[in-house]
Amino acid sequence: ETGVTQSPTHLIKTRGQQVTLRCSSQSGHNTVSWYQQALGQGPQFIFQYYREEENGRGNFPPRFSGLQFPNYSSELNVNALELDDSALYLCASSLGSPGTQETQYFGPGTRLLVL
Amino acid sequence: DQQVKQNSPSLSVQEGRISILNCDYTNSMFDYFLWYKKYPAEGPTFLISISSIKDKNEDGRFTVFLNKSAKHLSLHIVPSQPGDSAVYFCAASAMDGANSKLTFGKGITLSVRP
Image (cartoon, rainbow over all chains, first blue to last red; front, side, top):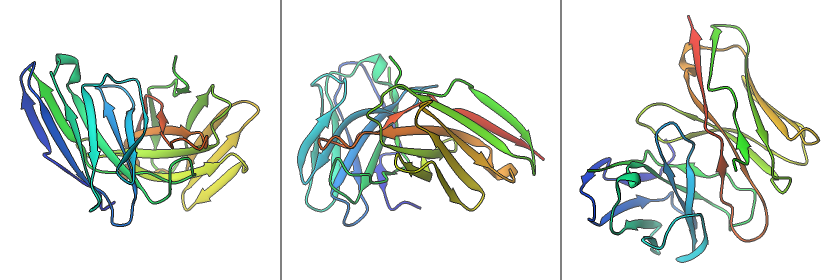
């Protein structure tokens, strides 16, 4: 049990729609990262937030955006959904500031299916 | 270009024997390495980590070895148990002061036979 929770667990959307995924980090964890895991692949870094500011972004288009709130919760928003966005979306929180050797603890993920 | 490679997609071992899971990396800036275990329908669970200033880290049945010159690390599980059957991901990060993103391999499916 990592203390990181995500909602919803599963979601079905159609192409072109928008989706918001939610994450609640462990209390005290100021850094949250989001990852996309496609079938048969390892998780891929989307972006990271530290104290409510985006602090690094992977190779994902601007239609992927996020927010982090003071209560250790965060959101991942995806606009104009495409079929290839179908994946498991994972959030991970860590205690330290970015750039330190801190372990990231993952939530159970949200499984998104785009039809 | 994959910076973290887990070249063997699967491994099967007998219960009680040693499991050795391998991982290679190409980015010399990586300085922190982690192993995660993942069951179906769950998120990755942290197992063990190692900093680049060490060559070995042990935690119970799990030991991680790091060979920086070869850019290679391995996870040893001994003795292996049926409950260890899962997908194992190797991940790495670079302490570049900007962010601490993890770069993952594709994973290895470990099956421990009773």
